[in-house]
Amino acid sequence: MSETSILTKKERVIVYVDGFNLYFGMLQAGFDYCKWLDLILLSNNLLKSHQVLIEVKYFTSSVNNNPEKQKRQRTYIEALEASGVNVFLGNYQSDEIKCKKCLNIWIKYNEKMTDVNIATQILIDAYQDKYDMAMLISGDSDLVPPMRAVHEIFKNKRVFAAFPPKRHNQSVLLAAKGSLSIGRKKLVDSQFQLEVTKKDGYVLKKPKDWS
Image (tube, rainbow, N blue to C red):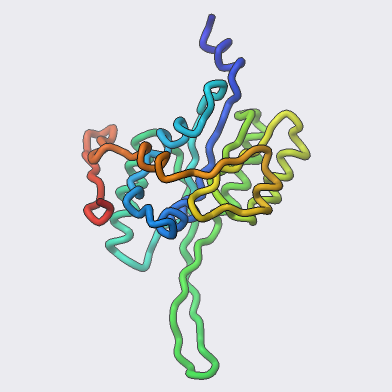
């Protein structure tokens, strides 16, 4: 039997990862030791035997307010890219907040474009028939509209919700066609090796603060 025949018998899955939703969910759950996460390995660990992983897409924004965090994030993104993950970057926007009573001013940072990027990719990939199931690793209710759109327009496709720790969301659950919660063991079992080698031979090392 040809490889093409085998693939047509399996449910094709593309995984869409909401980077900040997953990251802060792990932190809130006390799983900060799981940050060096191999998303392709995690995705395969979440799939069933009748499914095949087509691609993993990771959505985040570049941190720009802390040099050390920037360095760790850049190392991690390069490790993801070296493993074959397709990375989509949004913006990390700063806004001035002013207290009307004390007149103090501080900066608040907000992630921009991630939701739009995820929604766009899920719909484009559905239109181009790249998947049978979109696995969304997020608990963000802003992604409910594109989930519903896929189900309404593409009757033979479905969006499945994989909730990060502490990110279970009822509206996402109701919109999804299937769901699971990612537990600690799956995260622990899906870590990169301490060193990841890029195609050019450069060796990326797990950040010391992530041990």
